[in-house]
Length: 324
Image (cartoon, rainbow, N blue to C red; front, side, top):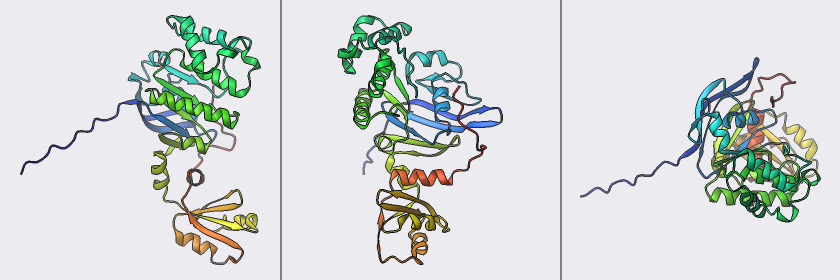
């Protein structure tokens, strides 16, 4: 009998591939031996609480900071020795609006195009204005724009030099839901065209729109993978409890051994543990006659709350992520 040759699956090219990234400020380890591999053309969500090291990691990836330890490549360039080459092929959208507020939309884009020595600059500025829906507002001063329009201008500035990698640091903070949705539709269009996107966010609905996720706390990677993989790997069992007296019940359940998280979700509580037995034991002494109790699938937020509570904080109470 002839054996069929096994199909060879080509590995997906990694646009970001780093190992052991570490950054210290004095005695504080802000990023602690962090590994990340981001395939080309993917939207990679980067999550974690404030001060977790997200911004510091992003700055090491794009050549703005040099790691104290660790190695790797970004777009095929060595993050230690070829930082200047990385900067020319990356679009970096910072947390704060960083363009000139006393210049118009068009003038800001023309300035950025000059910085990157974009060829046929007038045509490229015009095309970028049209693509991001900014043409009718091109003469408006950037400082007079609302949060949503500033976000759109900032994205346009990141794209005008046609980068291979887009780094977005909490890009939708303070933006209304409609603008957030439009923004994410554009991001998916860009990824479908081959652009790789690394985006940090605090919003769980945005995290669920990413192809893959990485979650860090206190500089350490806690989990990574697709949404389904992250939820499955958490080993979390979640029950929903609805009824009267949920605030008092929540306080009570938080003191019970074996309960990992208790969080209000609208008119119900989500109670999570590592097994059904632990939740059943916690509820055994409670009058359940006025309560509606059912097991549910853990949400991404349930998982991240549990991960955060399990993480160990090695910093003192005054430590925050360094952003200089």
